[in-house]
Length: 112
Image (cartoon, rainbow, N blue to C red; front, side, top):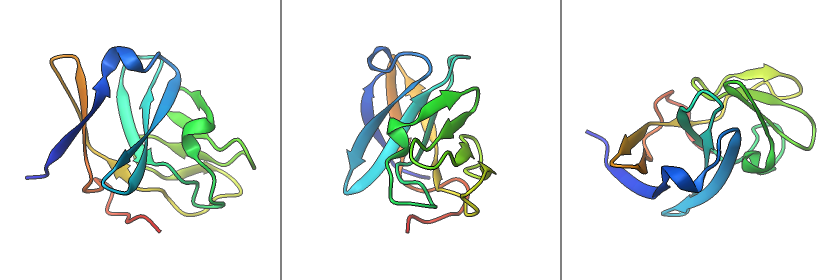
């Protein structure tokens, strides 16, 4: 079973936004989508070394602000060029109003 680490309170991340968290040296973008779900992905675009947490959230995707690559927050798969490689996706649990993330990628992709 994966170990989950507390990141922040759910109220710390407004809907349609993301925050950056450094968890034991791993940069993670924790995203709160408009539908109220929370997701976590590696906070680096697979196309360019740019923080995804600074990008736009649209539905269940996050868009890199530099070149416009988009990634599905559930799978990490790119949904828009120029990125062609997925980003790691991390399991998220919400417990008693707090967000917890595991550093074991659920999609099998390891950080570059």
